Image 1 (spheres, helix red, strand yellow):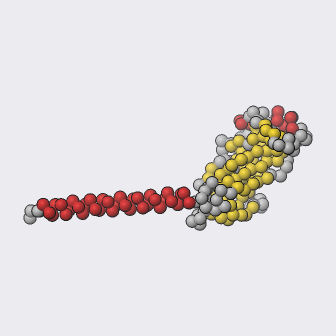
Image 2 (spheres, one colour):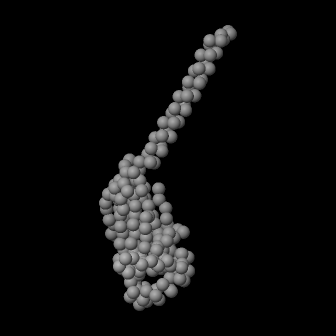
Image 3 (cartoon, helix red, strand yellow):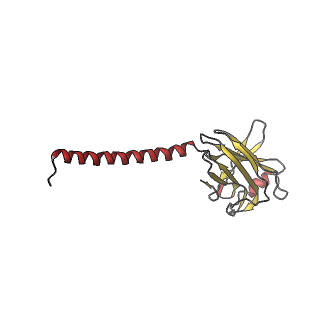
Length: 194
């Protein structure tokens, strides 16, 4: 059996059509995948700083930000803070008895965390700043956040920020009211999410 020219053209057209169909399926799958990525909520650490009182009390303010295009639903946040030797232990899941907030964070919205005031021994602010220049000593805040994206998938975000230790020297800033703040920097461990 010999194929005529029209048979060969028809087979070629069928193969080309099937290849175009496969390319269309790949394009649809890619668009679906990137569309889901674009539309989900993304929680990130926007700002982290610590208020340094003259008497040595410190209190951290952490701002989480939803930089995604949709709300983060059923958002639970827990955190712990304090003075510690460095390196810090890895951030794990929060203990069950640790108080957690529960909220919805809209697209472009911020969520503020204010830690409990604490103090290291009886050091005043200047003595405390000298103490955290030690590479083995830090003030740290570690936190854990879970939330559901618009597709109902549970996401997580862990953070660990420090003042002092390997991030020394401490950067000091003053606000409009004359309060003294230090920046908290990301630690090399304990910061991840999905």
